[in-house]
Length: 299
Image (cartoon, rainbow, N blue to C red; front, side, top):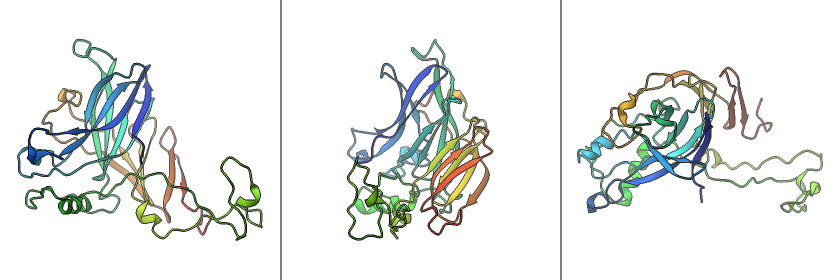
């Protein structure tokens, strides 16, 4: 099973945890059973007391509320990260967007506990940047209903990012009679080849497809440089655009307008899949690890 998705940070002395939770839109109507949406739940790390929720903007939520469609597209949070110095939080959804949230001073007349609250920032629309088809403007013409066929069809049409699960690392050796090393033992004879070199990883032809739809986010010391990686492509976005007014109620339920779009600054494609990324504090240097690096990879 995939573990719970969360991020923790200590922003100016305030220790908080944000985790992705599912909220059921309606439990009273039979027609609405199954419609859910994701939220970010903020929890004080010391006392474990929830103090706020942050809404994840769904472009089809208004269409559902107007009863133009019975089935609301299932938007899932697939990646969550934060930066303790800036306090910014970044959440990627399955539709190909990266949402941002930034801290503001809490009003002591309104908020009972905690110096800060997080409000919605701009959104990076990564879907087309990474080569996927644009999201359809409306779903009302398709008339999706509650059955497995329609849900699968909707998921295939809308979802481009997926959360990656844990995978076991499989290696081979040149000696067929060698016995794999047991966990916790330093049996170097079984994990190294006859040439005293580490074994090459096995190549799964389906690896790029099944495990290449995840996303990685790395933030610098400024919201003007945020690195996003997907499959074999890198992109840097500027999230410093003016966001929604803080009158949206710290992410409580409200019919607020769509957030502003983050600015794409740079993008580049590598020759192979990207395994890990890192960005310097000033946002000017990038370090990355490529999958199967050294095995026919000219880097």
